[in-house]
Amino acid sequence: MIPVHFETAVVFYLLSVLAVIAVAAGCNAFRRRAMRTEPTPTRIFSCSKCAHPYLDDHELEQSNCPRCGTANEPQRI
Ligand SMILES: [Zn+2]
Image (cartoon, rainbow, N blue to C red; front, side):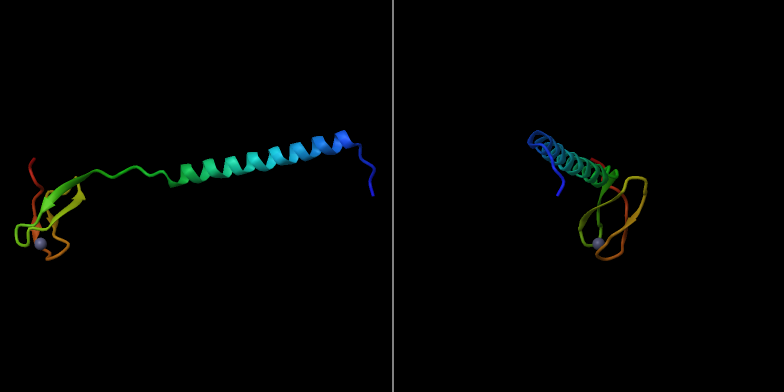
């Protein structure tokens, strides 16, 4: 057994706890940064055949309805 002073053992224990907390905080910050995504801009479309409202890419001039496949133009608000 290695002889260790009580003060040295307490300091080592506190540094170990601080290291575990720092690693956990770093992992949590990395995970939050990885999950953040920017929303893509969309436009509202409404099907002229089945009246189904849906969202699609904002750059499209025409979009096919996900229900019936009819080509539709974006809604003017
Ligand atoms: Zn439709």
